[in-house]
Amino acid sequence: FLQNVEERDHDVNADSRACRRERREELKSKYATQLAALTQAGINVDCPCTLWQLEKNQGDVNK
Image 1 (cartoon, rainbow, N blue to C red):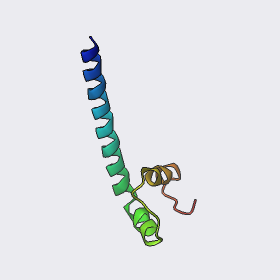
Image 2: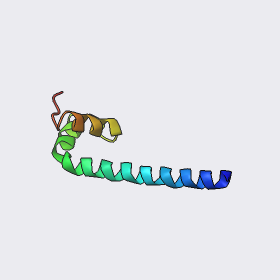
Image 3: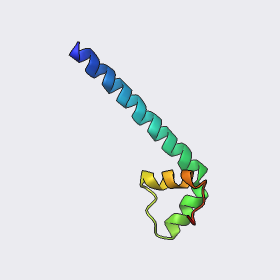
């Protein structure tokens, strides 16, 4: 029983990681211009929180 639960949890975690990775790639392509501007300003854009903030502020890099 325990092995079945662990296998299920492993599969769920693998799926959620894949979904997060796909979502990150979608956001990177959606905000490519803003990410380029932030990179030129010396801001680290490899952090997932940067993409989250762009999405939250609808791409406004001034917020």
